[in-house]
Picture 1 (cartoon, rainbow, N blue to C red):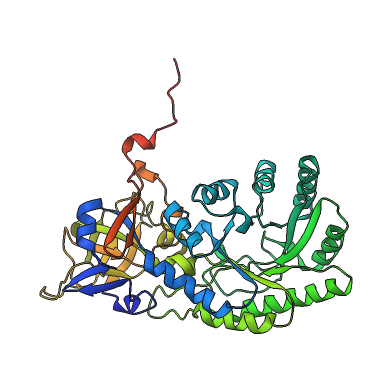
Picture 2 (picture 1 turned 90 degrees about the vertical axis):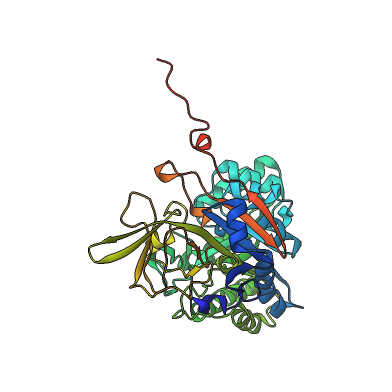
Length: 428
């Protein structure tokens, strides 16, 4: 049942009781009955545990934990994290408006992203956000012009590409020289000097983000040393910065073989490096905050045998959780109810109903599963719903937040009418 996932940092939020999987004080079969399948189920206590693992090691140090909204932008998630004192890292105007709609303070928002439109930059300035992480000279020039027209001084950090190998999937490696992200190391110092002379720009920091789902903190520490040295050089030229933003990307343990470090380990090392620098530390965790705080609840529709394979078709598909199809990612899969009294079957492949051969959640699970069984796909809180789609005209799943013995529907399941809302036929 992939108990190794439950035995990790979420053990107080996801556990078995009397043969049933629980989320805090709620039995998962009851959640399936109330909200249907497929549904995303989140645990408030798991979110709180994850934030504490970052905040506790940084006590007494100037810092901002800016949650990466792209990992999971549900308003309830944002609201809970805002109540815990988090700021937010956004990568679009839509994410910024989502943060504001959730009641969070825009003064704690950092705006990242390689392709910000002019209207998005204007929205950021008008909203009074903490900082805009600029990724190119042309973006800086555009922002300067907008700030001048609005008679606002734009707070800017330069996102530097430190050319550090994060040792992760190539799709989510963002800090190497061949990446589209950030400003080339050789150009960053020149641009920082130019920023310091611009009357419509306030250069307040340096930023980097080297990749996602990282299992080794050493690339971060290498990047941090680069940025701290750059800040020291700039200080020698009377260009004094306020902060360094080290981005996010810390991985989580999806399988027993994964060895993601704990956030506390990373934070203690960054605290040591930043000691005496006079700089505030910003970080942008996403996956490591919400990833282990969610499951995707699904039901087995059919069992079939094909080419000497036993296949279980479930009602969740790659449109609900695309990570296995896109990244060949492995997620733990657990039986929701006890199956100890069943005969053991050969390995069973878990697939979805979408018309793609890549719609496969696991090539083989090794516990007996039958039609109508409920399964929980674990570690699905990050890049699950946020990357979901309506492919194959499939309405998107419901989202549910569990808080102790209460469950709240925080996004209703889409209806088929939602699929074509906003569309029209031609008049003739």
